[in-house]
Amino acid sequence: MHELGHALQARREGVGIDGITLWLFGGVARMRGFFASAGAELRIALAGPAVTAALAAAFVALARVSHFGPAPDGVLAWLGYMNIVLLLFNLVPALPLDGGRVLRASLWWLRGNFEWATLVAARVSRALSVAMMGAGVVLLFAGGGIGGVWLVVIGWFVFSVRRETRAEVCLRARRSELTRQSRRRLEGKHPEEARPLGRARID
Image (spheres, one colour):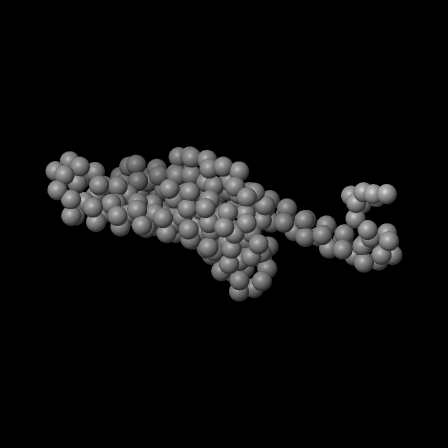
């Protein structure tokens, strides 16, 4: 449901969706193309957490008012609290988590530069991922067990994804440069020469 929220909002913003992939820590909506604006990315990034927050509130409320019995009520409460944990985790300001996308969209809106915003968000993500791995190691030595392992694994995942983030910046910058070069070439030509190549002549 979380990723479905992202996908539905993305379609409203005119961003194509190739599908939704489920993985160990949740899932990811595979989006086609680039965000039209900082506002579009912000709305898409917040759509998933909004769905998770609604689910958490619904499960917790249902567990409190229902009288299905100890076991069903316990399951409902557990689902509610797990959604709260998922919500908090996704709001960590580290790419590719929703919080990291919110951070990038905010920086993009403030500066008007997507590439700069992505690089800053990637640096913040790297710092947080290193801190998470360090905290996980400390927990392991302190007897934290599985909690420490999870922190290390999640931190490593966030740290490794920065390569994809860097590639995304390079791709967008390259596309922007090609667009500028094409416009300059067209502006330098005679109007007849600038006519679209794909236009067919009909007699």
